[in-house]
Image (cartoon, rainbow, N blue to C red; front, side):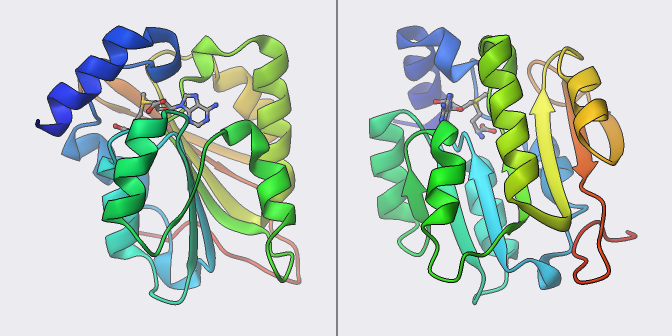
Length: 196
Ligand SMILES: C[S@@+](CC[C@H](N)C(=O)[O-])C[C@H]1O[C@@H](n2cnc3c(N)ncnc32)[C@H](O)[C@@H]1O
């Protein structure tokens, strides 16, 4: 079964949790990853991997010695991803992000968090908690990149992050906003947006 059909089948079973009828287009995938400075990223996180179109791109671009953790709630999707990407650490619930990061052997923070999560389908409490956790686990200068189909999340991102940019990707169904958010850099460490 193609990834598109697999995705649609999951959407019909749990539309709220999946949040989209098909995987992201290659244009959206490219917009999600192209501002990351992959050479500087030691710890990379993905939230809401789905059938893995963005996972694949991240895995191709990341440094081989980087650590890549990815969260996907649906068990069968996660099982498939685990087989396809044996070097990636897969976890179920993005709401356990802070807990899973705390388990890392050297207590590292994340340099980059890339999200396909359907934030619009979370309660305001869940949304605020997860955004706070994302901001907390990011290293100074770290990036949070998220796509959304509406502008609903924008004010919360603007107020949570120190730098904010958005881009609309029309070549996707439905067209999506890509939000690029950066935590303020500190003198000690700076990873983040390339100038490309
Ligand atoms: C809009 S889809 C995006 C899938 C993929 N990243 C893409 O771009 O095609 C959202 C994904 O987030 C997952 N998801 C929803 N809630 C989640 C949660 N609490 N933790 C982890 N994944 C979640 C869904 O199962 C779904 O696969």
